[in-house]
Image (cartoon, rainbow, N blue to C red; front, side):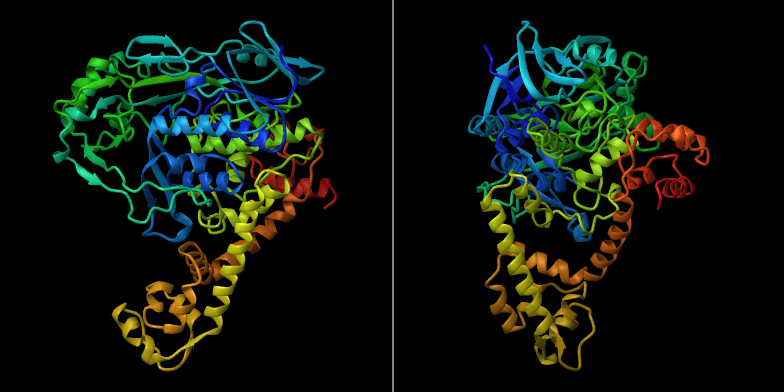
Length: 620
């Protein structure tokens, strides 16, 4: 019935969609299997993409030829660039999205992707022969062969939904859990664990009083995620902010004895950085209020997502407490919030390619690896899809370093340190965040993706043009002088020292109080020059000039760390026999089997002294 595929992707969430698109676009005959074709690319939780550090990941995916940025731009109902009051390393794009349009756009783009087929059914088993995965078996007993398989099961592996004292088997509201795969993998020697996540109630927007809330409008300048010229909306929808209060907290506490988390029915750990409302009022008892973001679900629906009110308390307690929030006095609930508990596999069982160490040609991506968030899942899916294609065609694996991408930081953190709670990306996790900005993801990554056959020629051409333009504008600013009479009024008005002789323009651009555009309003030659460039190119040149010293220092650090990354460690190295290593280091190194000395240096419990011992041992 079925031909043999190069790559099978199991699951059509954010990780699965990116994995299937990458594999197919690189030329592999790919099959995407999902339990429900109507749920492809679903936003299971909040209808938004990006945010702090997450926005950088979406731009990286887009720079490499992935689809998430384009889908987000097409379906956006609001755009905001977060952290603009801070330095450019912290700027993070975020979109509020139309939930239905987002999923419809994903499905449409996938259906228009050559080499990609679909099958609707549950996968219950992997076909494994001589330590290699060779295909899958479905719930109807159909065997489908493939050279590589990517598992992106999300929260579906033995998923249990909790609402108060009620328990329902399921991977998402209204959808059944996936059975069989966890048990098979554990029988093969994989270690598994349980995690939990949650979602808030959805309410009828017509029942809310927005006059009691703070309005949160989108940016006037809609940048978006994609480096391609995607169509942006002509108008935007507003979000709103309101707050809980002591009465809300007291009502929520009445349901704590029925909470699955407090009664011990949920064993898995939840995301520390996105806690439930009951978690918040328990852990931060001194706070008398918590912020609630009121987010519309789309252009053509009245459904509202109550961000900040994630809960698994009984539905009557949820509604009573919610109606004490300003603006929610007459709220009508569409569906209650719930928690979901599911299986995951500690990611230290993977290599940098996201291939499992125990079974060849088998790749994991997304929440199966213990992460949380659409963006983290999509980034992993992209890398898993690329490497599943490479595996199927006997090509070298493609990896990204910590100095090259947030996606590189994410994967290195997962496979080196593991995670016992849902992992979420933050800018603070990246030691080279001045290099890993959202504005330069295309310059960092498009050429790499082009060389492996993922990013297409139009993207590569655009990056080349951008590089030439930024270099030309930077050179002009470095070489052009300005007179005191042209700029002193501007300098004084911006509370920065006047000049008493000619200076190069770059000396003024370096001042934090001034921007290229502000200087151009007074300097005619600069005004004429910047007419040649778009906003993105001007911004890139300005960042390069202002942060040139910091960028040089980070590059020095990268070069030092690269020396350790270049020292490969033998896969079968017997760490237990190296007596000079501490016992903790021997145990951790044996478990994780780092690929390089650099990776070994980032393992918790491996000290600098242990690294020195390893350097001597490998002849360095």
